[in-house]
Amino acid sequence: MKNNEDNSNIILYSDGSKNEQLNKLGAGVIYTTNLATNQSFSWNLGSGMEVFDAELFAIEKAFEIAFNNRQLTAKHERQPPTLSSTAPDLPR
Image (tube, rainbow, N blue to C red):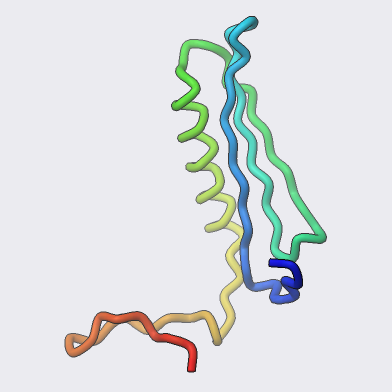
């Protein structure tokens, strides 16, 4: 990851947390394709949930962000597996 110049890679960090004193929950996601340009997203989830709910919320949002920002390139497209082989294509 030290020299990630391939902008077709999506890197996501997600976190959910709870402030025990205020009984408030939050979630956040960082999205990047090249480690130089980041987008951050955060949500105030209020109260009434557990911290695990906030973690799952953040993971779900990370998947949504990845899906909405996906960058398909010819070298990363995968063909459906054939009946004779279900192993993924390996780089040569």
